[in-house]
Image (tube, rainbow, N blue to C red; front, side, top):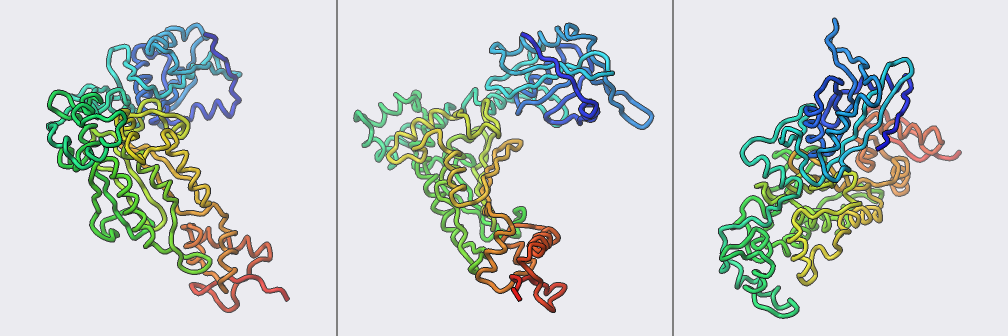
Length: 462
């Protein structure tokens, strides 16, 4: 494999020496043993990938740690490090490499970009590692490897057997309603056995979630949706809760629909200051539906936590337990597919009017729906043990446009009102919006109004 050689400018050279080691980057001396290097590769493959620069030494100086360029003499000198990385993953697509050189600096630095993989990549010592900050931590606690397999989507908790038996679902309302739609016709026991959600006399997690009228009795704290309404735009604190959290229960098929209905009702009660006074906040129902469907179907059921929907005055946050599975990253989430719970995804699609009827279109539909309402695109965050999708009620229009739109039907606008309609948090930043409009001869300050009473109006033509 031919590895490219890239020449750095002096500015890039200085920037490389200044890189901070973090969750996504690591600097290594050329003296690191090839085997030990694989600990970092394993950790990056587990998380969201990362970059390794081999040939940067960190020394203790009089004023603290100092970085120095201490590179390989030539490209062949890095062969042992490249070979051990290559052998880690049989498919061989878990990394790319390039050499870096700089005029005036001897030798070459090996730059390895490691990608998140679908499988667990074990270091050469036979252990798997995870990345925490700038550390590589071995996965060696009891149950930790299983936890890692659930995270990666290699092993699905949907196939674990529960203590629930056939009588819990054989005559449940959801099973009886569903079985009448199956083609060709069959009986509940035969269907459950055929789909391998009934093994012997015990139901799997998927079987309970799909065909029990109340899965939460068997799978408490991991199969419901909790809805919290915070009367604030800031971080959620108990003092701002409008009421005790609501818990939506039931089989997966109805769980999403019931949660969307409840959220719609709560959202429609929120009022936002707009050009024509207080207006109802509107989020596209399809966006909310798709995000909740994803949160329920693709969550990690091995984690004892419910899906949470947090409704704020200016946004909705949907938090789904479990990190992104397999090769999926935040950047790729709308462009790739990976089902952590393939059985749930497949079997719920067999219901009449299934919540996931547009299989594979979920978050793309969400983005398109937000675009149609001219709302900012959703934010997706991967946290330590969950994924959060944030639907923001913030217009795509510029602050200047929103101010002028407001003044079409209002005589004046204050700084506080401007921040309310634009979503700007800083008083000074809002002032700059007014100043820009003033400099364009579109606004003027209301005469005689200063300090806290200051306001702006459309400039009057004399």
